[in-house]
Length: 298
Length: 332
Image (spheres, rainbow over the protein chains, first blue to last red):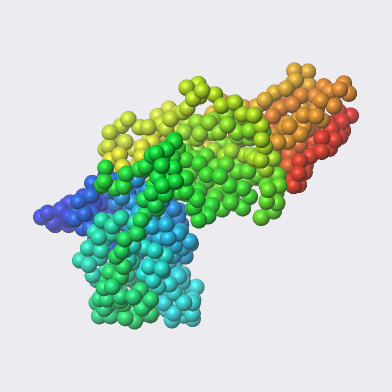
């Protein structure tokens, strides 16, 4: 217990950090390294929640495994820390069982796009009513810095000691191609924009995807001699170009290259549950009773 | 209309955790598979066990390993459902042998899942799975339904893994204001991760104890002519029906043969076998695998009675003669 920080007394604050009510304060301190950006994304998320007007009792967060997988454990919401790669199908079940919930999947790039890639593409295809936040730090931070499906060509990882030669995913393009109705990318330098995107994602009906680029100073930056967290923030600041509405084909990332940020997709498509209700009503007529009531509509 | 939702997920990994999400959304849940699909589900059997999420998993057993024999029978997943996910846990498994039992025992499977908050396996085989027989559906009002153990504690007082007495915690659902945290990590009563041997001991002992401490209450067998039996055929599922003619033939030849059918296979009815072992000569265990439940019979008999395996690799059922031959061999 001696290493726990009592934030009320040891930090000389006149007023409570506005993020505090959204956090499980009895779980602090968190496990994230100095310079890591996951906490910054969580801060943005708390702002998005505050501005969303949502009843927080009706918001659930589902994470997978990994550094970002720990987010669920720190948020003072109904929160689920699931298995590696499977937060999306868990969230799918949760949403279908209790359609009034706003269900947010919050996980990392390895979790969502390597082991969990299959679930991502199918949930996007179905337009399942979920917001998926991917903190992309280009590596597996919790397990020692292995190569990820997001690692750019040329970056060094423990399992790519001579540099990565595998092509990486362009996440917004993947989400767009699979049918996501909202797709945005920001970095943790862009806290206002990221919070706004999360707020829009929370309000969006259907599959909303937000990529949040984050440094991993302990593994990715150190192994690639990119400096510390601040140096990566500088990179995010200097190399980011806002390209709202850009063709997602063109927004792929390269090693320390230009970063296209912005809101790329914002469109309407019936959700899985809307499609089910519409279809069964059409086929079965009066025999069918509409299932569930979408969030905020009953 | 019963108000449920059906979704065919992209794979069995997804379906086995989508049901767990749905359980935390407040619903009773099930999924169905055969063969490799069951192997894919193993990770979430463990997640269901440690998060104590009630669920029913139907496995229509076929020949394996791997893709094996699609649509041809086996009973070779019995040990997999007992041990398949890593770590210590205790599942429940039921073994119906008719369409009527598929109906009756399915209700029981859900009731057990809710009572003990464990994954419950419904261990069919291809023959029972494809069987057509008359089924009597009773009046709904006469069916005993066990509801979820809903907590009545208000938000702020409820702890996800606090137990009182029987070692099974009460449950809430997401959206009720409790702000629960559920994790597959070893956790304390609050549901928070607790990475130490004390928390591990406390949690896993309780998880296993939910079933081990109620083992006798969970015994369900069908006993036929055990009173004067010298040899007892122990069977389950379709093999119990194939064994019938062999037992009748042996009795026609004047042998004292009893029949013990496992309706609940896990937890295994150790005490039933143990007490029979003190007075019978031998157990004969036909099963559509190369020797799985026979190991449990041997363990329970503990050398007090002979145990004769009647293995079969699957693809079809035993010939009654094979079972009869082993009965006669055991009787010699």
